[in-house]
Image (cartoon, rainbow, N blue to C red; front, top):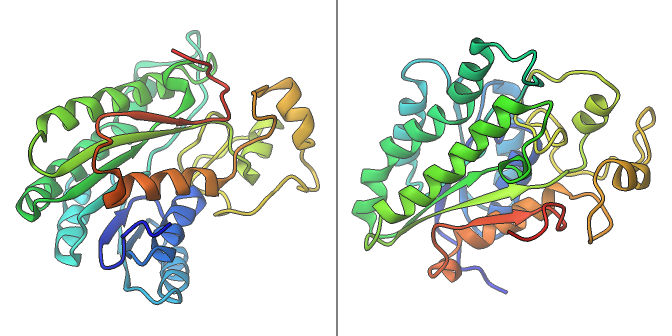
Length: 281
């Protein structure tokens, strides 16, 4: 199916690695020009090179979205790039339960996941409205509906992201700009195996103690030499009706659909791409 994305431009935050990279590459496969964002110049340039190899325009914008003024500047760069598709993918995670979480941990979760989404979106919205067509897609989490007991601050921040997405969709009524959210389940990544082994990954955004923005952008890591077997993880940690873990491509495909003109009548939703692990509402 042709998603009719050829000629459109997109900013994917946190796309220099991890699922963000897969999203950027998938949009490029559909003919979308992509502005790659990250904090590491070398990593972002490498992704942009792979995106450009698909025959589309690719550029890089760098910056830590939690720093003052950076999110706004990234959004202005996206405006000048011609991006009318915004994928708010970047955001940190950390493990804290109710006994260990300090006020600073709650603040960091919201400053990393909520405020950058607000700032980038707010700055880019005038351009999207003026264009008469646009997409704002945020990356949520299965923790929105099933809060993770060892990631309480992260779970709450992601719930706020979904709430904001619904609010934004209503705010943009009649403008031709839609706002939707994709909430991943447990996604295969090297970071997931590290976390399951009790290690920490301080970079990037996690999908349910699984995906991290610092993880590889799409490969099947079930053969990770030092990690547990995928079947064991599914059975013991993430039982779901689909019977497997997610792949970065699962998330990227959902994002590409919501970004496309074919999704004009899809607005204000949370699309759970989690194999059914969260069940029905």
